[in-house]
Amino acid sequence: MAKKIKPVRPAARLPKGFRDIEAAELCASQAMLGAIQATYERYGFEPLETPAFEFTEALGKFLPDSDRPNAGVFSLQDEDEQWMSLRYDLTAPLARFVAENYDRLPKPFRRYAFGPVWRNEKPGPGRFRQFTQFDADTVGTESVAADAEICMLAADTMEALGIERGEYHIRVNNRKVLDGVLEGIGIDPADADGAKRLTILRAIDKLDRLGSEGVALLLGPGRKDESGDFTAGAGLDDKGIARVMAFVDSGDDGLSDPLTAISELVSGSEIGQRGLAELEEMQGLLVAAKYTNQRVRIDPSIVRGLDYYTGPVFEAELTFEVTDHDGRPVRFGSVGGGGRYDDLVARFTGKSVPATGFSIGVSRLQAALIALGRSGRSSAFGPVVVLVMDRAELPRYQRMAQDLRDAGVRAEMYLGTSGMKAQMKYADKRSAPCVIIQGSNEREQGEVQIKDLIEGAKAAQSIADNKEWKESRPAQVSVAESDLVAEVKKIIARHQG
Image 1: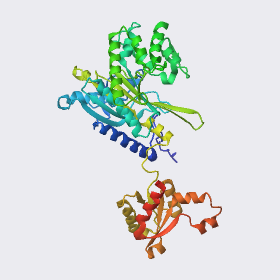
Image 2: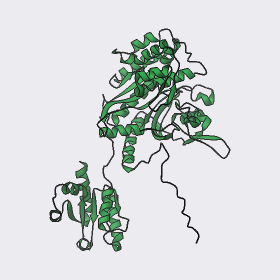
Image 3: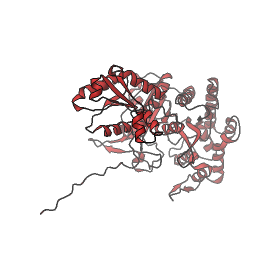
Image 4: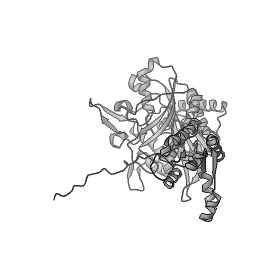
């Protein structure tokens, strides 16, 4: 007898660095996205959607994790053997769109966009290879008023999501100022290679994670992390490290205006002085609009890790702490950032098109809102479930469900084939606020039973035995069929209030 060959079945597993997102988180995310969208539209930004794939050459190589395969992106070849890549952010596709449609677009062009982006980076706790971003950008103006407005937009967005003043800061710096500091230690910001400058930028960008000591090592010989992996440093000497760190720390020296300290560090640099002047102008605009230090502040430690920024850069930082499951303090830090990128469109056209923008990391910000208890989900309930007590009466039950839907109530008829006990378990798993029950007795009397599952769960905690449960019939009422919708709405309103 031939041996039976077992079928080879694929393993049910996710690729590393990706995750499934279930209903509760998705509902909270949709409510949050709606609040962000409303704020962006209030500023006059309009939506734009670009595809997930772009030609690889159009995206460019700007990612910090450029030593990863495919320069940090996921790529494939199309039928013409041209390389395409999944977008790693929403800004590079915008630059391609503007270059392709420049003549017909209004200038400035103001757009917002949201959607998933992908990065072929080393995953870790809370760091995924697919995540959602929500961007707003102004393209076609050199005015730093556009940069100041982006900072105002970022602050207003935080507050629209329930993050109060004092729980966040929009922190602002300027790449030109840092270039002025680097000129002072012999690094030419216009150097075509720019490898050392980029290493310095990315070292400073890790300040919140590694602290001053870790950054100083990355500015100098390099650093070995906890796993034993070694990251080569920029190779600066002690004097150079000290000058860069003095700039980075100049926002924490107790001065009411860090621009004073910055001015001394870039006194001999033309590009540094231009950056300082831009910061001073931005600060004047922000103060005039009442976006003071409590909301938006100058912070020289902000540089951003992407290589394409050319002027002002900014980050939205959450300042509050919460505790994790083990009681340890957790600080969320940066949940968004952006800056001016005047050379991205020029990659396609050869003509400089100034632009500035801001991007929110949706997943990280949502995790912070959940930690604050302000997740923004529009409803904590699942649908009302109409139980099926008699399969011959399916049309009747379906009509009840539809009557509830027509009245604006989420509802479903149970579509399985199990008995009442299993149906009740199903309703619990669906987080139903109540179930509708109509057996033959109720049908003959023109009534339905409505079982309030939320109130029933509360009562169950205080009822001692099954006899008491049966006698009390907690949170279950009989109403006329004609009153079904009104009674269900009362139950939901009571628990939402």
